[in-house]
Image (cartoon, rainbow, N blue to C red):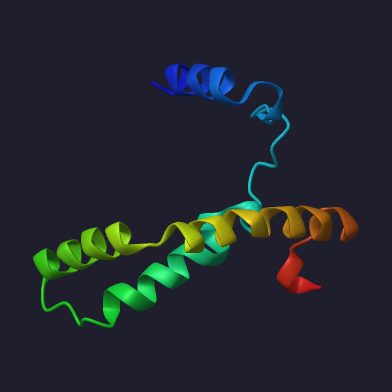
Length: 97
């Protein structure tokens, strides 16, 4: 499955795709899900106070469907700023500086 996804991404994005060998092994500052999306979703999901696992799952599904295109766009545009910061800090975590 992984190879199939990599092939699709390569066809879709061509030279814009960063090879997995060049991506840092663990850098949450560069992951939109780590630096914005999870916190955003957590706040939305728990604002409805799920009472059990099924409520939690329903909240997650609902809130994912409700994420606006503008929110996603802003989230991914933030990557460019963070890339510059990570380079500036020689690979260190942005929040640590």
